[in-house]
Length: 637
Image 1 (cartoon, rainbow, N blue to C red):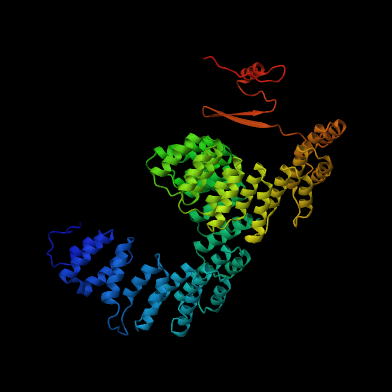
Image 2 (cartoon, rainbow, N blue to C red):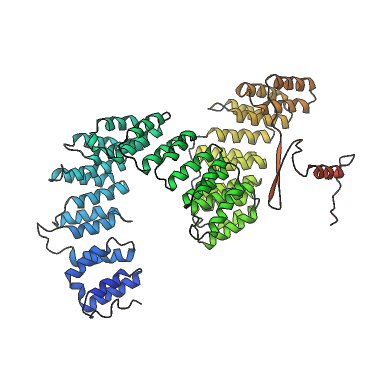
């Protein structure tokens, strides 16, 4: 219950009412004040109602905005309009729509003004154009344009700039340029809007043409920064960007950060570092750019050094450092930063932080840490309806807890196709092809439109589970029902399904009849199937073709060698090994990982670098028997 804001004010004063309104946050609060306005008769005070509209129409609280609109339309809007009336109240209400969640209503209010003979001005029209551009309302925006042409507003520079911005936002850059060319007078906003419009669409040459003819006195920081941003998009544009940067009469943080970001994108960290060192002032964007850049080129130690050097950090920089660690395989370090954030009250992890943390946990396979993070998401009431839910399903799947992945999936009320894809991918990892195929059928029943990733996931699952018929059904549904053109990955999945099932001749014929040329991955899949099923007739020509496609990849030679060895063709094995030796190709050693008490141990074939290698080999020897039978090892602690 709201109480009087100032007990020293008399009951018939409007001041307590306005003060109380400012404290309103809910519809109940507003209804109490509305009741007071009616019982006191204040609702008939034009001064008070005007103040309510002007004060509360821009409020961030929806009940207050709705009340201001109600007061306006009930008590102020439809009084007999005067020809010289200032439309400032109408503009305030239009602005509340054009800058809010119901932008389309701004156009309707303009129509009401026209129907009721209410005068409007250029601000009324500019606000409606903003609303139309926000929602991409082409028809309505063009009607406003037509109205401008009929009235005396057609040559107003401010409104012409609004129109250019409107056409650019709606994607009609040609209309915007026509309008620009017909303008009798242009200012910095006119030029900057067009230059920015061209740059956002990658039309750097047209942006440069305008920049070159733009009068020098009209160029400002926005102009120079836009053009630098455009040059940094070009493959070889950093030289042009640097030349422009050096000519700039003034520079701000955006100028420096744009240049650093440009060098980072092309991997030139030396020049990025030179600029970073020269900067008169840095912000978190500058640091984040450098950290991200060093992480991308694999210099995580330099990235971490910069991160440690910062006196103050924000969540963007922390996210950049965490992402860099994950990209370079330092997932434990990424989680350390995350746990530090959790303990630090001044910085709160956001959705991006949590996505990176989930990715790190998935790569490490630490299901306990995943469970703890899931609990944190529940505690902080993060929604799983978007990417966080997808990442959580993926994390549980990769950590081996498919049961938890299914529970998360089933608990999400409004699932997107990404949630379905993550669940199907998780089932594929665990060899549950039947369930993955069933999910695809469930999607059909629920009218959830699958995408190309859905079919890759289901067909992968079918391949690992030996479900040839189901894999063929998927491929057929994709093409015939959803009219999707299969990509190379889909053809690769089908070759893998047929190959794993031993249908080597069918797989070969499938490759030969593909409308697109098979790549080395597809040929290697066929060769692997030939080795497993000892099909030399298809495998040998497949291997030779694969070697011509990718002669530097040792795996093709190794597969062929193993196939020959499995058939006892030792001369052919020697021939392949000699070929590898002549071409200086070496087999990449096999590698495996095992996690023990939170520490991941890595082992290569014939590797003796592990600190406990003697104990490991000793234990293995004790487990071996002469007939290769394994006797259970019992530890007597």
